Amino acid sequence: MSENKGKLAIYWAASCGGCEISILALNEKILDVTAAFDIVFCPCIMDTKARDIEKIPDKGIDVCLFNGSIRTSEQEYMARLLRQKSKVLVAFGSCAHEGCIPGLANVSNRDEIFETCYLDGPSTDNPAGTLPQPEVQVNGCHLTLPVFYDTVRTLGQTVEVDYYLPGCPPEAARIWDALVAILEGKLPPAGSVIGAETTVCDECKRTREEKRIKEFKRTWQIIPDAEKCLLEQGLLCCGLATRAGCGALCPQVNSPCIGCYGPNAGVEDFGCRMMTALASVIDSTDPDEIERIIEEGIPDPVGTFYRFSLAHSLLRRSALVPDIQRHELPLPGAGAERSS
Ligand code: SF4
Ligand code: SF4
Image 1 (tube, rainbow, N blue to C red):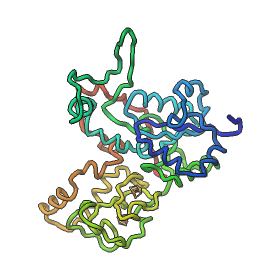
Image 2 (cartoon, helix red, strand yellow):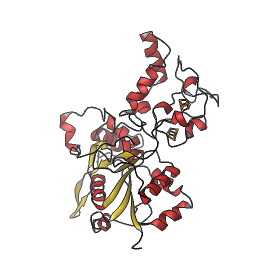
Image 3 (cartoon, rainbow, N blue to C red):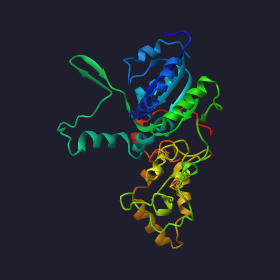
Image 4 (tube, helix red, strand yellow):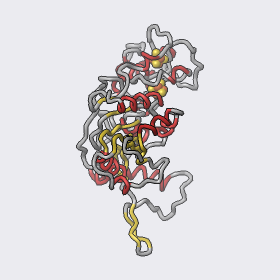
């Protein structure tokens, strides 16, 4: 460890590990990262434990890239611990920023998830109906597991976050931009999303004419024209509601944007923005026809409009009946991000 280097922590909570892969995609620039920072904590690549972080003085970590949403008591503990120990806490990637795919489980509650995973799965063999317990005695030993909450929360709904770096995962070039901005002290105001304010449509090179949609098509139903706007061809491309930053990667390869960078600046709820945008391009005034176009073309509205942002949305989750609220994470003292 060098006295002159900054200290960097990288943590994963409820996430897939793609954000760590994206750090590796910095390629040779990773050497510049290690020249500037000592990595003091990164469970993905180093055998470091929570107790190592507990020993670090408060604010002894310069930057923490925290990816993953908050699903369990252990993840909540690590979020609070890393907040306490870090000068700059970055919600790194879509799961920490908006809940992302883990947040889609907010259409269910803990009991329903446990039923599907441990009791009803087609490959499950669990005749005793054993479910994970937070505490259990085995041969005189007291064993514990983290508590599994009913609701997935974003990092910003759990602790105060300094910056948000969107994307599933964030593009390596954007990670580099953020690290350079941190090193050079050129960060936007605290609470900002680091990145562009415009939309993926602004980065997309496809030609656009008038959008008038009679039918939404699934990606497997057509081979789209490689030059024309995908939405104008009936594919549900979310570029018009999604923050720029990736360079319109998906439309570049004939695939619609599914919104992984979250809403662009000034938009509070990604799904609402997408739904209002689509409402203005459906080419019908007949309520029955409009209903048919939507029902046939968008069979999974929650997965389509809130794939990355359900936990962060105005809806946040499906309603919980009172008797299962015992698994809920206590209400946060949270901050929501400001638009950059
Ligand atoms: S809707 Fe999609 S395909 Fe059309 S311009 Fe925007 S990003 Fe490109
Ligand atoms: S085009 Fe959309 S879904 Fe694809 S990487 Fe960019 S923001 Fe994510």
